[in-house]
Image (spheres, rainbow, N blue to C red):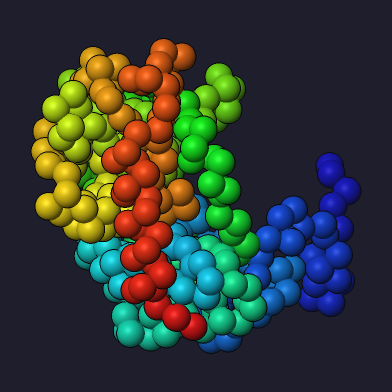
Length: 315
């Protein structure tokens, strides 16, 4: 029989606080709704093991960034989160306005000019069954952590992408930003293993869906910005905002995109929260057009960066 000690509160707490915490230097501040307070000691950033968010993946999340103490697309992220909670019949433990105020407060408490915020809404603690009704109240966690924007040289060089073995999510699940991110993790794992920057997944009909955490679009030979239909992908806040900002400048088409379209594109674009708009210059080791970032990628990034500066929520 294993010789495992049974500790009292003080002994267990002492051991817990003495444990090494990987990534501790990245966490700026966090909030848990049950406590109702913000803390900056990462040793206390804990999740109840019986929260269905953890052991059933029963919850949703959003990630947003702030640069120069300006939160980007805060309301757009909260609106998408509202849709995700509605899709899984999850009622937050407080009002959406309170969640918004909490997000701003956590960013402020973090004390950094640049950072990321992770908002998590879970079914809540209460047991280990699959029954969501054993949790009497939803959980809310908000974490601010460090973020360093990529240098201009990153965008001038461009990135590589490939077709991941992991297929696109089922249509109904893809549109919910849930914490069920195992397929996304497997895509990223494959990218690291194969030496590519970004994985792209396709649905069962061979149509392009999305990246591990980003949307994908391309510019075809006519100069049209082609966006894969949102059948097996999450409508991204960055992509939708970029399309709105570029309205009238670039023709846009929503349609099914095949791998042949990717190979034949003038530009392939990765659009997401952390990188805004990133140009793909090689796909499966083969060049995209002239292997240089194109004008649409540069313009969309310029528009997004200006939008953050002009419309970000200051704190």
